[in-house]
Length: 436
Image 1 (cartoon, rainbow, N blue to C red):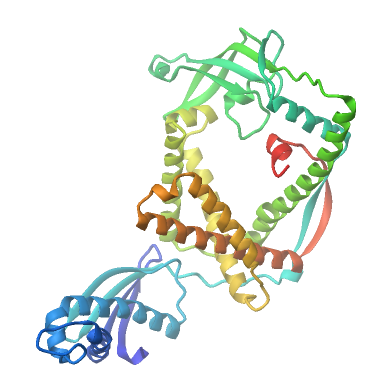
Image 2 (image 1 turned 90 degrees about the horizontal axis):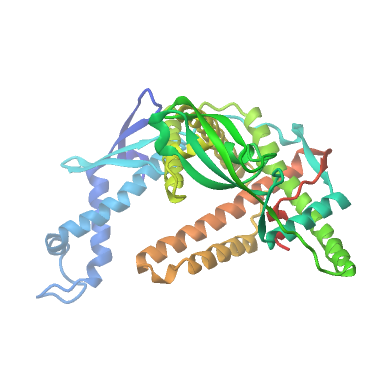
């Protein structure tokens, strides 16, 4: 399609949403309609005519709705692509078709889209970042070895004070009559992780019959609850293995932990250091409406995730001592960063497309993993159309992941990376067993 076949006008609202009203000329429309008739002519059987020899006007009269529908589908895509190419328009996601109307002067189409803002990438060679370097000594190996024992240990009730990793049964009681419906008993694992619940973080250094007053929020209002310690359970980590066998396991475990420490450093470099550095160096003004839509999608997904875990949003907010406003503020920052980073990644891919090589074997590996998981989850029992949709998603996601890795590998090779001492590696349970 030629740009001369199109008439268009655009308008932008206060949310940066662009509306494109576009008209395809009658001549261009009729030309495409005739192409569709010619394409289907050898495939239709009309009484009184040999197959492939029925006049076009008769074919059109018999199959007008289907032929015009196919013509519209072709022109919807062609018109956008022509406009996109001629005007160098870059849209976030797929433009939304608002309206389609076939009139005497041609096909009238209306689209909505958010434009990708213009921005400059920094010179990669000018970027300097630090990569963590973790040490793995005998004390780290010993800690990991204890974690491996704990995994298969049974827990016994203890009168001693709890330590990190112990199971603590607690009873939660609110002092406000209106909040007593949230009273409950639960078992938590004593933790010093700042991302854990207030119950887990306050379950360290307690013993049976202790009480703690905790401050939280219910429906956005500050509330006080009493955490009663009902029981402390400690793992029985008795090790009956021979000293010689223990040493062999620890030697193997140390090699494994060194690899895990390096993997962690690589992950932090990419997902934290480079992620934040690129966002810091690039000045992008996000389309307001797009940002608000993505924020709402993320907040809705947060609520669905709570439901899938069998927890109400109120229960979750109580457990982390936060309000709706706190959660929204956290998501506002993370969504803004993620959108910005996605735009940077897209521009990096375009800018360095001739230098970036995607590892297709990795893409296949990721696809196979996801397919195996979906098979385990009952993929074959789903309707055929749903199966195909899932497979299509797997292939796209695997390719996108491999592409993202290739882009970031290229970035890592062209920025200045120096190592810094990050202290001892702190193993977690997934470090002990992940890939081991």
